[in-house]
Image (tube, rainbow, N blue to C red):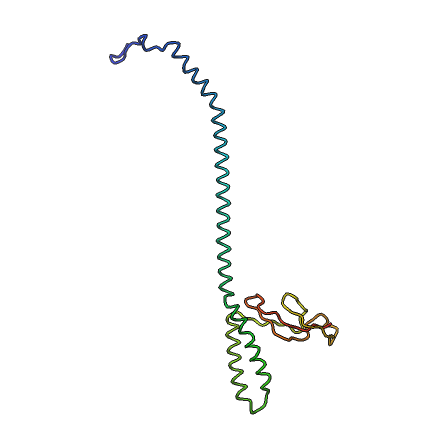
Length: 187
C-alpha cells in the first residue's frame, strides 16, 4: 500500500546507462588525482615541519638573547663602579704610605689619628661597594691574580715559589680582579 504522497517510479526517474557511466569515468579521473593530492599533502606537511622547526629555533634564539641581556645587565650593574674604583685605588695606596711615613712620634699623634680615621672610613666605604683586598704574602704564586716583579732567594725552603713581598696591593671587585698584586717571588 502506498501512501497518497508517494508516487510510483516512472521511466523518467531511472537513470540511463550513459548517465551511470559518467560517474564511473569521473571516479577514475579522481583516482588519478589522488597520488597528486597525496604528494601535495606530503609537501605541505614538510613545509609545516620546516616552519615549525624555524619557529622553535627562532624562539630558542630569542630566549637565549633575553637571558644573555639580563645576565649582562646584572653584570654591568654589579661592576658599574669598576672604573671609578680603579681610579681611587692609588689614593688609597697614598693614604697607606702617608700613615706609614707619619710614624708613631708623639708630636704627630693627632695628625695620625685624623688620617687613620679618614683612611678607615674610606676603606670601609670601598669594601661596602664590593672592593676586597688580595691576601698575597706567603701564598703560592698565581699568575691569574699576581704580577711577578722579580724573584729573590727565598728566606726558607718552604717559601720557594711563594710570594715573599708585595710591592703593590691587588684588589678584587665582586670576585673579579681589578688590579693585580705586584709581588716578589721566592726562588
